Length: 573
Image 1 (tube, rainbow, N blue to C red):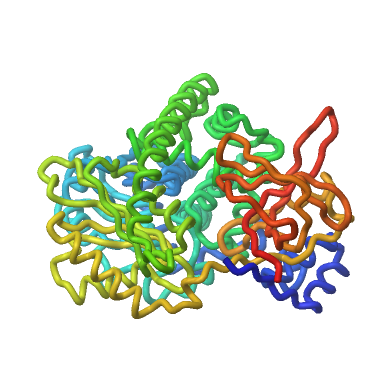
Image 2 (image 1 turned 180 degrees about the horizontal axis):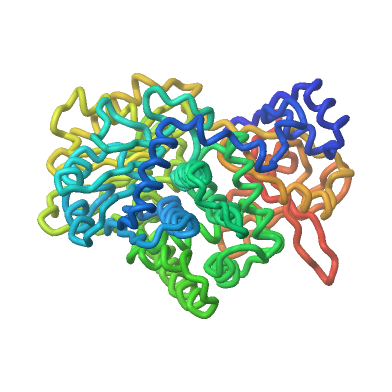
């Protein structure tokens, strides 16, 4: 590992500080590309306009006509947290805007697979729907859209995934990544796309005179807590527009303005919603909703986000919490086994892994392969695919894989190249630069493995394969205070806008193992003692070491103290 320090543009940091931004935050924001205080304005007025999103106006017209005719709308959702929140936002928002008949259907990960398939379209038609709306999927659903159109349904695709060479023949497509769309926020999540469609629909209905009564127009900002959760949980890049959406959602949650389901999730996770952070979304709420789609039925997660009954919400949240505990147990066993398999591939002399990793075991659970791939990627810093046998009827010979990547290796593009070089090996694939999925026949696993290795050998070099940890440099001792840590935690951090990680040389006074696998540290930082903890790390540190660390607070005998959470170490020269 190489610990590096981000560049801090001095003019930008000075300008932010002059505008009243906390000096430490000014330095952190400047290092992340924020040039002025205007970029930090999280007001709703600063959101990108819905009119800039290609297809949003046409979607608004289609939906307004459907609402006027009291047609039946059915949302087809994805089975992850982004899809669940997008579905809940769609249903809640459409009802707010006057839709009388709104239903939803979420595919089963095992039985149905991903996206709008032809059988799913047929099930929607059987429900007597008039309009089918996809959320967080559909951009690659050629057959599903065609089947829906053939059944007489109008189809609105709302998605954010990268399209292939061909677009589905939907009535309307809303996707910032489709050709010809100039919408600046290409990283908006599926829930964000649905929220923008609702904003466009409200504008269309307003133009038609729908809100001339004393009540005025419905407030869509009540949906922002769900938008914020789905955006963070989907690990999309937090560009300025996404940060505004998340900041607005957090503001409402901290004020207690959220659906009953979110309140119940905070409770079962043991988190304080009045101090909600993006970490809560990513590591507490999101995983509990995702667990439903991985091991059970995402209908549980969607129903939780739709209910306004506190008792029902508490019951559903407790169920999801139990499923998540089961998921963690399954993941733990799979992770250990997969790590052993990956370590068996290490070069015997250099002790380095191959340029890319592919692991498969017949006992792996297909609902957890993505999490395990992420853990392996984090540990070994290699593009990684983990495969499990499909449990869908008639698909037992197929392997379903989930991949996670490292900077410099575009995973979906790699799959596309493999598909061109080895026709027929990939039965289906899709995804993003950093995360993707694919299906292969079991007999073609070795071919896929070798093909991925070949692409990785061509695209990756020694510099890319070295793990680099970007940090914010030394922490001035006057900022090692609980109130400063809480100030940092209130900000919006996440993918593409990394949470603060500091780095500097410290003295290791003492160290011991806790829980058999965590390293508890007594450190001397800037001449003063401070506690530290390095989770899931057991190797001892030298007396002086360059540490990369985050900040957290804990309480000891009624006193709040600052503790270092170690992210990495580099032996000082």
